[in-house]
Length: 221
Image (cartoon, rainbow, N blue to C red; front, side, top):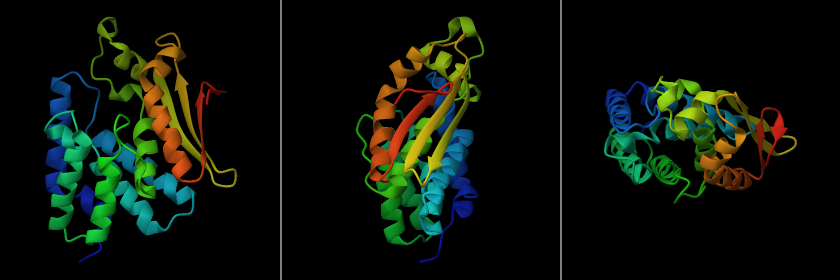
């Protein structure tokens, strides 16, 4: 078995095709962007969460890989896309000769990132959850006709900035969001993302940290 890195996975042509097709399929049913941009943002944030908490570089890199692959399952459909992505990750990473134990860890992380049925079962999975749920930003909105925005378009378009801040000394992981309230009220963010914040709190707890949600410089959780 060879050491497979995030850079290796990012260059994999099969991964590129699955990401592009998955995003194309999400666009067809009216979902926000779920392609290479979201994959890169999630991978970077997952890596940073573990890195700032002092985890080994190998774990940080696996978190980045999990972040990059977590939405591949959208190539088939939205339902159970985490489990589908997990099986696609098995196929791709096996073909790349990744160590089987590392594949198993990544599969568990990817298969458990959905808030309705997932749980943080390992450190890379906890980092993936926090990274994935933090990506709320207007660049993900495909529909630019504000008159026809649904609540998801409105909340994402209102989000000018989102950032996961890790304070290792205080053992705090905070999601900091800046929302343009003329476009969407904070209550709308909570309405559609409360379940995501709950799994983020579980993920932070798994990493022995407390989770905070800060919107427009006001701490809500």
